[in-house]
Length: 418
Image (cartoon, rainbow, N blue to C red):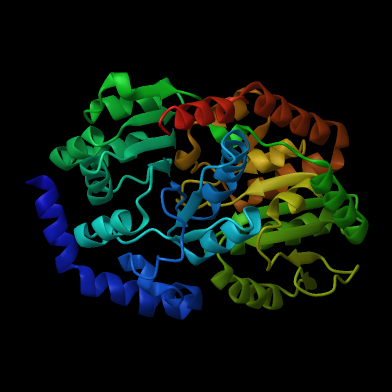
């Protein structure tokens, strides 16, 4: 009954959902209008049948899943794979991180679209990243005896409280999950509170820690450093509206103490590139765009490209991780840690509550609460290279201590192939 009411509600909202995706989001990012029929499980016949479908909501999940998918391919070279996403930026990241891998949008969770998706593609397994819990898709898969494995699963206390408000629906979702691989015991316990059978839960750790820096990445970072030719570089990665302004204000103050400092600002969403360029002009900061030629006299580099953030982190002394000075829940600090770059973060990191406490315990990150505090910490770290290097070394040590989740997860997925 709960899922029936959910489906009815979803169908009632369908005109608004279509209007929001195609018109509102499409106006900001034209990519939302491309491949639109895939959102109803149409135009999928070009994709391979009998594949393992990996679902990654957007950019962050794709970046985290790419090493997992590559490891799975290595262990199961003859198994077809499809990667799905929800956003144009996620789709672009799939093409960048997993070239030649078939991909499409996951359909909107209408009952008819979910059944059509499975009937058309006949997947052998669904592997869903993190907290993408879709009632109709999971129920349709369960009805066809298709394994539904939720991996790298996390559930914050806030999300738990939200699901508890619709507990009958949440119970149904839990009943249709085959296996759930959680970040830690705390996440596992929250899923159990929603009705998940404890025999279905395995604690594997987070695959986001399993970042390996290969020689190609090191070479790219070396090229970036040579291009920038600065000894004091900080990156503000994945910034949002309301946060861009705070970062630029901090950099203006940093320049008063360190006039040779370079800020690399990377907005989270491509539709923000133009807005940040306008803010830079208003602030009278000289800047270059990553998509163009770098002016060596620039005070700021606007990273208006996709897929380069980890290399930009690697080329810096300090990384500020966005989405955290405003209430967006933060973003992943581990790509910076993999390059021994210590991180600064705002207080709002509930989306990464499985990472930041351990990183802080290892003294690999510092929390700031305002633009002024951000300025103070950057000035302090630029003035003390040894402290800056120690922060980065601690971040890397935390990363290395928590690695190993990918191998466990690949084994888990592989056991369900038969």
